[in-house]
Image 1 (spheres, helix red, strand yellow):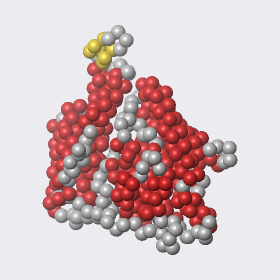
Image 2 (spheres, one colour):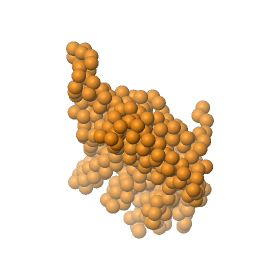
Image 3 (cartoon, one colour):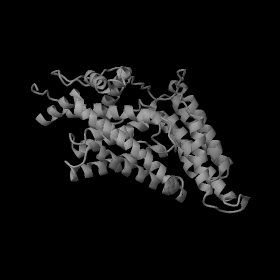
Image 4 (cartoon, chains in turn green, blue):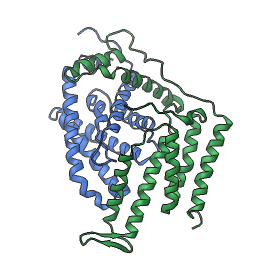
Length: 211
Length: 178
């Protein structure tokens, strides 16, 4: 059974501040050109994703990393470190594969930590998005009523309840969508600055900004 | 059938987007043979509504689905979002294209198979040029076969639902009367 994860970042950061916080490590992952600082950034983003209460499936990401590295090894480059006969394992290809995998996975972790569903989109799109989320919540709440044996009938019932077609006033979706909107406070901006600072320090320490 | 009620198109689009989102989240949780590929289950509302909504409305549906998927799953700033966007829109354009070309000669299963093929080919190309390099062609047959299976199932599901759902018939009737 899965326990409910606690979003520790919610106490400090508004959805907008979260987004700003994410941009630091994300930009750093774009410019990093060395495996060691990339691994540092990966660790930082993993910690942030954990703090955001996101479930990180290590098996999935290990498989992803292995497939990226595996495919990179098919294009030999640089010094041969292991010759299997049918495959020459080269240092350049291995390093490039590892760097690419670290970057991509780090970006996913940064995204997991920085994107919050309560992030308000501007204008008409924002209003439409709020409506979508309301229907989504209603569908989630009723999903257990769908049965495999009578899937059409049970889906019909759920759809009719969430979006009625036989009443004069099509359903207004439930208003329970939690708009977790914290006003951006100075403590939140401090956290944003800290994360940006840490990303910069990792880049400088790894020598990615000195080349 | 009694006289249809007016259905606000914007609300219907929001509901269908939510449905796409619901399937997208299920898809995200399903184990996949190659982690970055999308199976396309979340395209079900697009297939279902292909002969009911305009291209613009279908594009809104597709756009909200990929954006929502990125926001809810938290993958908006990652390669997953790119794969999802390219896969969804290439599938949409292909499905609408073949549906308009062969309207009465192609079932929803055929439309969905074409959509799956387009989506998987686009994602394969992205893998070659962005993620994995030329070696990605090796997984092409596996991806296209799996895409074919899910494409068939989605098309079959949509066809059955269109034929048997009272809710769908009411929506179609109301939209045609609007």
